[in-house]
Image 1 (spheres, rainbow, N blue to C red):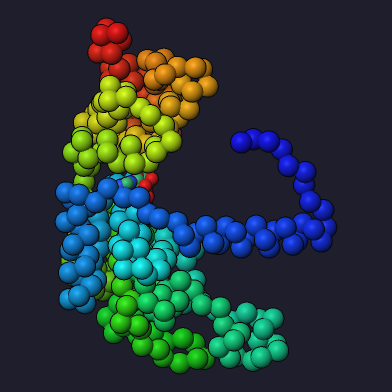
Image 2: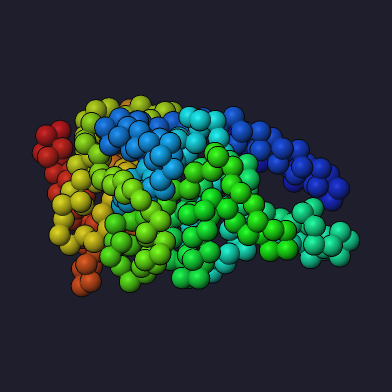
Length: 315
Ligand SMILES: Nc1ncnc2c1ncn2[C@@H]1O[C@H](COP(=O)(O)OP(=O)(O)OP(=O)(O)O)[C@@H](O)[C@H]1O
Ligand SMILES: [Mg+2]
């Protein structure tokens, strides 16, 4: 797996890159979304479809790593459409969403469509597909306002090229974390008003979360008792009042994958207590945010010790 390859030089390097790029592009085309669609995910999936049919723009609210982006990808995949997304921050400008003219091409061809490089919003409006906008509340207000026309009128004005009407297949969806709803960065009232339906996702039931972990670890075999401990680790952070941002599903997957790989390296059939504890430590060190005043290192150790305690005494 880690065999070293000789690095190509000069011209070779360029053509090798082109071939490799094409291969990667093909891989992206044939990539299949693996998602556990049941319970809240099934409900959300169905409501997304209702919203699209009813021409209502939904917002998905859920903590980080709960599956918001994957849900949209799966939704787009199901209807064989493209999915593009962008995450809002202060640096995003309308041109990042709509696109802009390439100055080098403008010199030759003028302000024509050929010189225009479309952004993800315009691309999706023209070709149809699902457009996910993460953390729209972090966008400067004037950028949020630039979304009003696409989201309300299904049209957009492209500077120098004119107004276009969006494809019938254009489906914009906002996603955000619950704290952003109340946080300092607010969704502008005008944009919030365009989001007609709110879908909440929370942490799934234990069985469902473990099924999700397994789906994301296809190359490893983890016993039920190890999976149980991984769930205990992450769920304890969700009940701990010292923890402001608990472990996500993403963290559970990471602990599972890292502990399986560490176990494989040390010749264990199943991750031992020490292996699981070490893997959890590597993952949770950066995955949790604690209340001010709490020493993260000690708190992580204590969560791991408490969660794995019963196994220690039981085996
Ligand atoms: N229902 C599910 N089935 C399979 N995998 C899932 C499911 N839900 C979440 N995951 C996995 O959990 C991880 C996080 O999912 P995703 O990136 O969609 O979360 P998110 O809510 O968009 O997070 P963020 O708020 O950080 O953007 C991914 O690895 C994803 O594959
Ligand atoms: Mg996401």
